[in-house]
Length: 133
Image 1 (cartoon, rainbow, N blue to C red):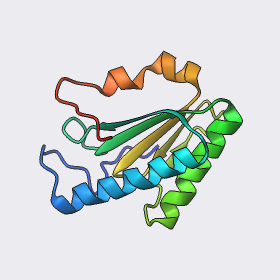
Image 2 (image 1 turned 180 degrees about the horizontal axis):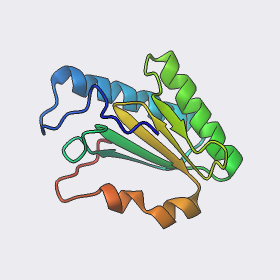
Image 3 (image 1 turned 60 degrees about the horizontal axis):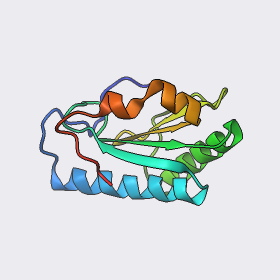
Image 4 (image 1 turned 120 degrees about the vertical axis):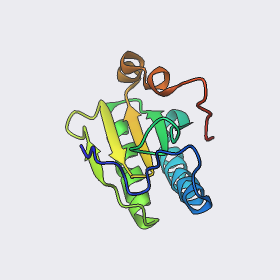
C-alpha cells in the first residue's frame, strides 16, 4: 500500500479551486464506475481537513467477492480512462475489501460483513467532516 502523501494532499483546510475541481471530477468518475456495476450503499466523505493522504474517501459494498472484484476493476479502468492513474490497489486476492488509491480519492469496496466489522464511516467521521456527495 502506498502510504506516501499524495502530491495533491493538503494539510490546510482550504483546497485550491483547481484541486477542488480535480477531486470533484475524480469523484464523478468513481461514482459512475460504481453505479455502472451496481454497487450498494455508496458513501462519499471529505477528509481533506483530517488527512494529508487523500482529500476524499468513497466506501461502497458489493454482494459477493466476485462483485467486489468487478466493482474495483471497473473503478480502476474508468479512472485510468479519465486520467486518474491508480497509485495502488490492495486486497484483490481475497476480494473481501479492495482499496483503490487514486491519490485525490481513496476508494474502499467491501463485502457488507467486512464493512460492518471495520466501520470506516465511524473511523473517518468527525464533527467537522461533511459529506462530499
